[in-house]
Image (cartoon, rainbow, N blue to C red):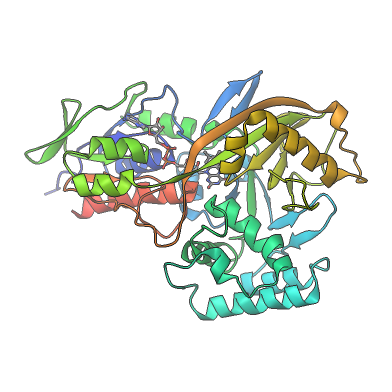
Length: 437
Ligand SMILES: Cc1cc2nc3c(=O)[nH]c(=O)nc-3n(C[C@H](O)[C@H](O)[C@H](O)COP(=O)(O)OP(=O)(O)OC[C@H]3O[C@@H](n4cnc5c(N)ncnc54)[C@H](O)[C@@H]3O)c2cc1C
């Protein structure tokens, strides 16, 4: 005799990447899914919206080869990952051509060869990087939970810290090294730099984010009986005998995959302690500036910009992307300012001014020339709550606060910082938790 599926009717609240992941996994497990989102479009913080005839992402996103759950989910819903991304071994190269370039192949030899070949970095700094990495690896990439990244690296020469650890930290944790959790950074290094071959590969989107998951996932879900309810901001969750009501509609179970602030509001009554932990999370902004520069092509699609290349000259952006080369938007460049609290305070005008000075200085004397007179600003997008601040000893809320209710989202307790992979993984774990219960 066959058993009915343990999840029959499931509500998923929030159609960001965590909610989409949960909805797909639940559908695969035989559930009938109703997916709510207060926005008209799915995708949450990783969505694309039209601007001047282009589909611009909410902010430039980078994926890496170690994003196993995310890449598997894309394939599951029919995305051609090979076509969707520009893939290359990790290269953090500045306009002057200096920087770390990892060769392909197994992680440890690739890292050693990459660091030894980084000739612009003094010998002492290169050796210190290798000995630190060896020590972290021997220690199982663990450290006390209350250590900051700055503390973890206090014996690393400044040159190595500035050239590698600081940019990796702000890119992955979106939190300045002095405030960022060393334990989470070590997990990222383990997964990305010292995991299976290809984990450190950069995957730069060659399609708008919408085409890389939200749109195909919705098509996949709807073709399997899933129901999509855009423009519905869920107001109330209430437990019932053996299930949950979502705005008065009965479900067997719920996955709460909305923002942390909305989840805290919705669970303030049913799970007050959980809601208080969630409401206490702090956030870090990201500012993305899109510039147009006719006729320019960078030597590679992604460039790293050294912090404070010139003393006294502020350097807001850490990374830049040539969207023309990625086939997304001709003559268009996305400049990313992570951990951007200072720049949000200074305002858009000052930020753009400082960015133009930074680029003029970074490209000065290089070919092809970056001519400030040819540059125009396409748009600036500021996400004030881009990610939670990934600080030492942070208490993150659990993904299983109540029977029949799981929570998914990049902020839910887990080893990773706020990333697409963290979000997608939490969606899968939410469904696995409900099925086990
Ligand atoms: C500018 C920027 C750049 C980033 N860069 C990277 C990067 O390079 N690499 C990387 O891995 N990650 C990056 N991230 C992080 C990544 O985008 C997030 O970790 C991920 O998108 C989080 O997904 P989520 O589903 O957890 O949450 P969200 O995307 O926030 O989804 C939550 C959804 O819930 C909906 N919602 C909220 N309340 C309700 C309600 N009451 N009822 C119904 N719906 C509701 C919202 O509309 C939203 O669609 C970046 C983020 C930003 C903002």
